[in-house]
Image (spheres, one colour):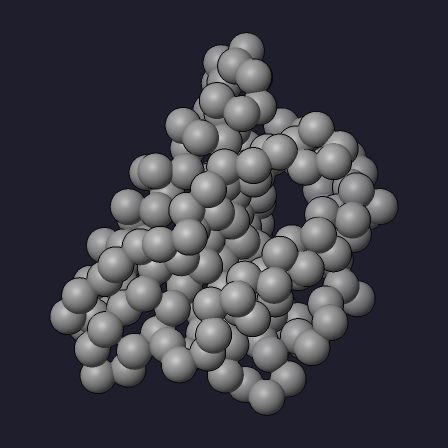
Length: 161
């Protein structure tokens, strides 16, 4: 990943989740990619509906986590659902947390084969939204390209290395 170093990746036990954690070279931003299977039966829905239907519960869980971490107020903006040139859908939005340490967290959600791909970028609150959006958009594009190259036997090698 451009301007990010892989800190490590973790496979969940029975949850079948895999997390890749990156940190920006200067250390102020954290970038996480989570891969996990779609629930049974969801493959019968079109991709737009799967992504849109899963985005809101994921966003709500992130919002609650920010509040539990001490944010006095959390607002959301920049939310959208859009198609890509290759026919996939990406839901995105930004959560802005006020408190002792103001921060923003971008959430992007899409699919890859039968997996959900969730990307989150946590940045200081004073960084411009456009810059952080560009960062996570590019990172997701690079991650998905690496994932496509490296997917095999239902496992994922380490994208970005």
